[in-house]
Length: 195
Picture 1: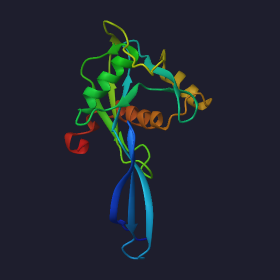
Picture 2 (picture 1 turned 60 degrees about the horizontal axis):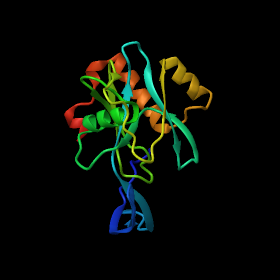
Picture 3 (picture 1 turned 180 degrees about the horizontal axis):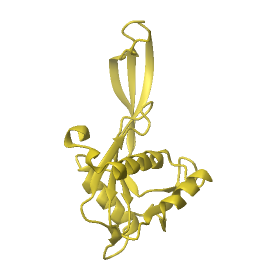
């Protein structure tokens, strides 16, 4: 019968490099049963907030932007880094407004996930916005942002995924939480799950 895996022990840890959006942490780790040791490198970064925003007409706000990691464009839901200690709902609302110029009343945290637990320690918080509408003043991009905004039906987003036009992994997690939320709203993430 399979046994649960062991938690590796950290023998020593240090920051080997630091950048504006993350730092590289170098850890010497030991397996508690096998006794083997390994040098592990992880990215210690900001948590993220993502906004799944739906208009009264049933359209979703979808943005296209250049992504340096893939040196190409990426269609996705509006999202960005949280400030240290920032409430995820507040951060998602800020990102939605900055990137699209839209806002909404009564946003709801519908899920959280770890984007890449093999290498990153951060959490992505997914927030749903019902009845999103244009706010005064429009978007507020920072100097490195430039986005194309589309208002799309869900089946249009699913078609873009099927055709390989939308491929951001966090988009798939957001769709899972959105679909779960729409089927059973009472299963929203509780305060205990957020901690």
